[in-house]
Length: 250
Image (cartoon, rainbow, N blue to C red):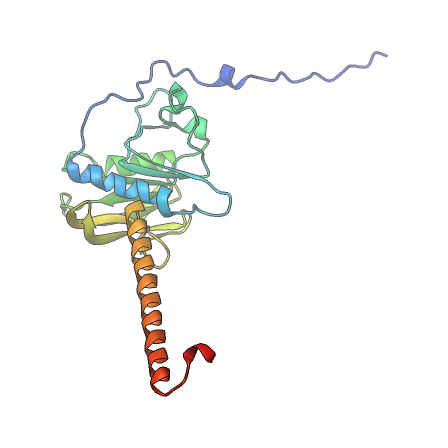
């Protein structure tokens, strides 16, 4: 009796099964942000790359502003002001079309955090966008309303629970390993209340400029401490000489 060899499954090239995205416009080059929003977006992206080690050992992340998030080929994208996605790499070749936006089928997961900055009452941040981010599975959703356009809280945080968003108590996002907090201070010469990432204790994640200033202040404290020690040693040596004791011989 002839032995029937099991069929060898066909190995498919990923390029052959990837959806066709030729019709998708990944960017339209339309300037839409106001000056405050532009600064706020950078304050939420740059500090993570400058000062945050990531969600854990050997875990990477991607944070971006105004990048389209595509959940389906024939649906328009969601474009959060800022999003954070854990355990994904920024592609090396960002000019390839399937790397120019955040396609869920390329990254294998939705972003973990989506942030919307309210600048008027036409953005639907508290209704349709809230439902849309829940639909695609974004774990946390934040609405930052600095001018209180929506006549509610300046900061609203939501966590996904059984497919819907529920208000989140506190500022900590446990599955992200980060928090979001309001911070009043000066950023690039503008005094305002800003939205900042923070650690579990509420300490803001420093920007690169803030880290440089912290290092400068630390070096200055060390210099002053060394100068004080030198002056103390000189006073002690002078006193010993007054008593007829050679400080070099001690």
